[in-house]
Length: 370
Image (cartoon, rainbow, N blue to C red; front, top):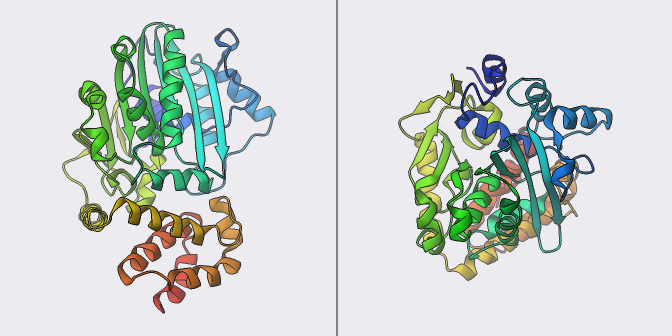
């Protein structure tokens, strides 16, 4: 089925002046935010912004690469294809920030893509290879806000006044969540300039944010896009309607935006989520509703104690150090009650399957013996 690369082949010769911004363009900008622009795109000097074409050329000469993993393969090629197209090559790239803190934990990155002097897409990076970012995602399940969300709100409040015209916020995975959160925290004078907020298979929110005045103010401009077999996007609550689209993959692998199906200037839309996605969502919500916020926190701490038992800091480390980590995992898992142990087991297997599907079999045998 056609994907983002096919879209660039079909529409790449049409500038934004000839063919307006659409939902597929949104996803391309969200994907481009995963690129490491450090030392190439200025942090706080709009007069030194580089075009996407220039950024791609400098990244290639610097031999910059993406993290290894199923969710990142193809992103550098996407950059090259976009940067060589008439549609994207002259996009100005600016205000790039990137920060990772393994101790707190925290992972935050944002970039402004100005595809016209009066039209801008502020993109928030989703969770990358760092376990610090993954833990922060899980913390959203019981915290009113996490550090990355507050950083996103401050970032938009700082950058938006320096941009002329309309603004779109967006991101993939956690980046989509950050875009919605930031929009909900904007003062009226800035909120009025937000044309749309795209949450591309990002987790939802606690009811307290869904019911807040800030969220209700921008709710009509939120566009939530979920692959038919969504897992990540079904976490927590979405207070808005969502679009369901096709993917060439299922379950957690459908989270990869490069697998999303495209038709013309839109995605291939579906009428309902898959049975597997609905069952996962129902089971997760039923389980979470039975837990206090304190119990949710204990679960997250236990999960990441297990994942980092070998000193791993990234998903790549989990793959390399898996043999050393198994004993520590099994020991920690035995301390949990049966139901929590089941969710921990499934979640751990998901993490490992992201890096290496074959590992699921060897880990599964050990964990099933509990």
